[in-house]
Length: 189
Image (cartoon, rainbow, N blue to C red; front, side):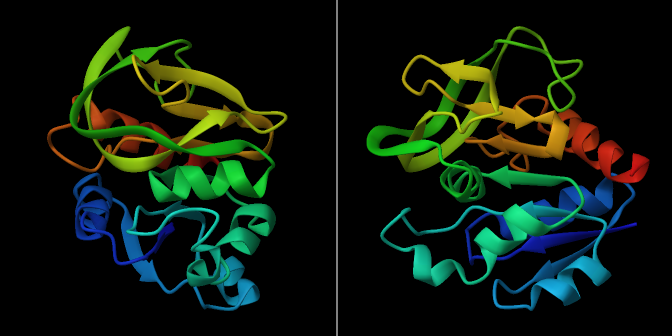
């Protein structure tokens, strides 16, 4: 099984690859300009990373990311910018504001597949100015913070998962559990 990690040049991208390999999986970075057919043939699941851009104004910089989100057949985890892109791609609402930086308390609303085994609240590492405030149709909000209404969302029917925080960073409690839960979904497909 190979995990494609869409690299937007975010400050934590190397940590995503490290967590994937530490958990016993093989991961490779992926350019956002790779043709969709090649991505479908090369990877079993995708992680859409964080990055320095704002959505929607910087959408042209994200290459084929929207196409990957909408058309890739396997599971996808969106992290930070990836979470925002996923919400945008499926018609969710994003706003500038509700910024969070550093440690933030996240409250679990529903223990689903990626949050399985977590306590009702935990500390997570955040770095964003844009927030998802309304989930796309078909997505369920599964975690929030005191400031951001959608810290995590899922659409289990299409294997799409998004988290506003950074599970790959050691400052996020239970980040490895979240990553392992997602990667176990990749194995089952």
